[in-house]
Length: 471
Image (tube, rainbow, N blue to C red):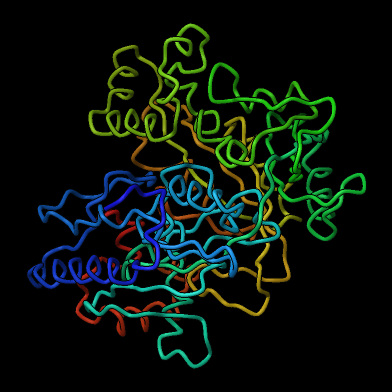
C-alpha cells in the first residue's frame, strides 16, 4: 500500500474493497472457539492481557487515508490509520479531524471504539461524535456499513460501538467530519490559585468561549500543585502574532515546563496538535529524557510517545522496576495510569481527594461536553447538559510495606471516588470494578442485546472480560 499519509484518490473504493475482502477471509479461516485478536504493531493500552496462541488478524494494510474531500470537509479513513498519518493528510488541505487525541500512534478506529479526548472536546466532543459512517467487521463475521440515520437497520451498532473496545467488532473504514484550521495557534497560559477558581473559569469558557474579546478554539489545563494550576487557551491564527516567535518543543525545550514560564506562546498547528507527544506529556522524565545531557544525545526523531511505550512494555514484561525496588529495599509502587471524567462542579472535590490521597503531579485536565445533545452513546453515556472535565494522571505511587501492587488498592480507591462523584473512567488502563458496578456505568442494559445480535457465538472477548479480567 502507498504511504499512509497520502490519499488513494478516486480508485479508493476498489482498493479498500480488496483489503476488506482479505481481512474477512482471514476472519472466516479462524477456527470456531479460537480467540480473535488484531495483530497490531503499536498499542496505547495500559492494561496487561493474557497471551494467546492465535496469530491475530493482520490489519497492517489498514493504515491509510483513502480520500480527503475538501469541499464536503470529510475524509474516508482506514480503521488502523494513526492520527499522525491522518493529520498529515488533512493538514495538506487546511483541515483537521474535529478531535485529535494527544498521541501520534493512537488509531482512528481505536479512538472510536475506545474513546479519545483533546483540547477541542469542549466544543467538538470526542472522536466518535464526528463519525458519519463506519464499516464494521462484526463478531458474526459480517461486514456492515452503519450510520446514525434513523432508517439504518444497524443504527444501534453505530451508537453502541464507542467504548466497546473491539468486543462487538472492528472498524475497517470510517468516514469522518473535518474542520478548517489555520497555520498557527496562539497560546495563553492563564493561572488560577485554586481548583474552585479553575472550575468556575471552565464553566464560563464552555458556555461562552471568549477571552479578552477573542473566540477560544482550544482549552486544556495543567495542575502542578493545589495552589498552581493553569488553563491553556488556544486561538487559531493565520500569522505569528506581534511580539511572539514560533516555539519548538521537539528538541531541548519541554512543552509542559513552558506553561510555568510563559503566559503567551505560539506553535504551528501541526506542532500544537502534537505538543504533548514529544515528552508523552511529562512521562519522559521517568526515562531520563528531560535531563539536558541525555536529551542532547537522544535522537530527536525518537523523542515521541511510542518510543517511551516500548520501555514501559519491556519493564512490564520483566518487572525491572519491581526487582530494583526489592533489591534496594524500597517500597513497591503501584502504577496509577488513568483518565477519568467528573462533572465540572465536582472537579474541586476530586482534586482535593487526589492531592490528599494519591499525590501524583502534574495532572492534566481537559473540558468535555457532548457535541450533539440529542445523541445517546449507551456504553459511555454522558448527561448532554453537563460539562465534564477529563483528569489524566500517569505515574506510580509507593505502597505501605506488605501491600502488593497487584491488589490495585490506589486504583480501586480512585474508581470508588469517581463513581461517588457521578463520573466514569476510560477503560484503556487497569480496572477493578465488580460486574454489577461496571455494568451500571458502562451500558449494562444495552450491551447484552448488542453482543447477542452482532457476536452471537461469542467469538470476540466480552467487554468486562477484556477490560477488567484482562483476558
